[in-house]
Length: 597
Image (cartoon, rainbow, N blue to C red):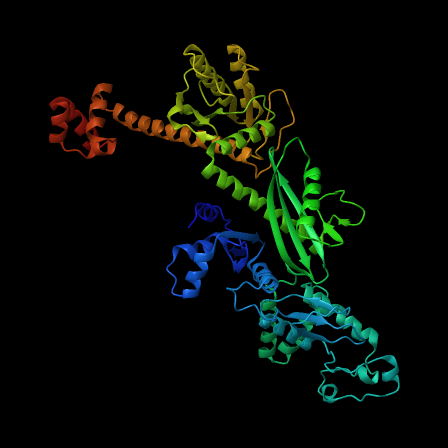
């Protein structure tokens, strides 16, 4: 396995989607779907395969590409499209012309409703595709029980019906059809049923709920419980089906979809090509910013280049925002529905590609990874310097007892645990977080200044405006205000507070900047609370031993070194105590624990 391939395997996403294997000629040789792309692809390289075909396939894999989708069903449908498009030589099951089934409402007078695997552009409505024929059959059975639709293929034009060309068949006498062929059922009544059927197929059961409930109750009143239960089971099955797929939609035809995600140094752009309602191509790449190009400028360049490279002649493109790519191309910015979901799918692929690039950079070029994160933090927090050295403070106390504080240190975005520090609060009585913060910040930076140690570029205070103001008082006393950036983070909504600014900053919840600040805050809390618990526990143990008459601190220390806890001291025999602290003290300790109170 090549180093490049091994790196790709390490950074694949844990999401549903489709993966493509390419050989040394950059030809797609296999397309597969997965609920978890990373696990599925890695299984090819970690298992001993019994099949000779699979072993040969793995040997020929040189590059891996993938397309992330929302659900496993979408992955199944997209796999079908791509196999039919590229016909990879190692795919054998889906190469034929068999497609997933649809429900068709035929464009005709008194429309028929039926299942089909062929989508014909004759104006008919198609719903799907469905990955399960059982789901379609259950849905059509339900429709048949609720509505009386014709199943014949006659041309029921007004002229032919009015001239009496057709006669009602057995279906009419069985009650399965109301006889539109003889004009017994009106077109308006029939079309109203089609309207309700269309809503049911889309998953909108509200308009048909009354008739459905009436049918079930009718069966129940007639003691036909099996029929009532049958309808209920069908509804339960249908409640989980997906009426629409993001991957395939027959109303979207011959369209290019583009999106972009960017940071300070690079843009990550995705291209999806749709033909006959199916995604047949996906391409994602990285663009390095040379100047301060906007997302619009980068996307415009990408659109022109990609359409030229792939010889695209699609007359329409979908994009997330307005772009200028010439008058000959229709630009659509979808706001809702399937078109919007296609653009969101493109954006999701760009985001996953960006994450993979970050993971790969972290492995092969850690310095570049650190520089990128530091540059991002500098921009997000509006700092004058990159925060290579960050310190975070947190207080811990319970009802004012044993107040302590913690300071944690991060270097280049990672914990530097050897530089973590604990603090016992010395000058504050009672539960006063503000005064405790003021004391700890003063002591920390007074010492750093005295010892001529390097100061951080950023201080993070765990708390809101009150704690931040207290920390600022200490920086003022030390003459450090303005020399070190300082912010506060409030837990409720993860607001970032700045000195003198009443309006907090809200950073993107998925940004790496916020993740690092949260990591700092959580580390400070963990480190502080551990110290506080240990101190409280030690205090509780010592206070119990201190109640023994004529037993001093030195004796308590000796006992704890030997027995480790007050409970073991209590359970010790008189002889064991005598060996440690002598006869008289041993008798006093033993009698304290064993004399009835």
